[in-house]
Amino acid sequence: MSLLDTFTNLSSGDQIREAEELLKKLEETELTSEQLALVVRLHEILRQLDSNNSTGLFI
Image 1 (cartoon, rainbow, N blue to C red):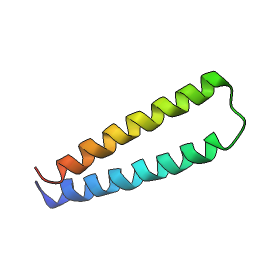
Image 2: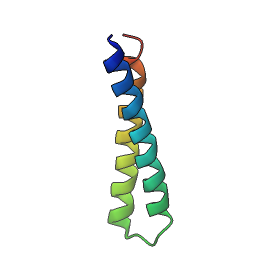
Image 3: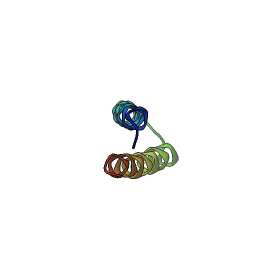
């Protein structure tokens, strides 16, 4: 893996964490059950992306 790939993965990880923080703030607001389900799904997707991002660091 090149140095640029490593920095890209680290940057992606920071963006994933920022997105998770924003979703947590959104959860603290009044949401409909449909909106809450969407937020939960977004959390799942971000966890999968973060997992894939972490795996990419070792390849």
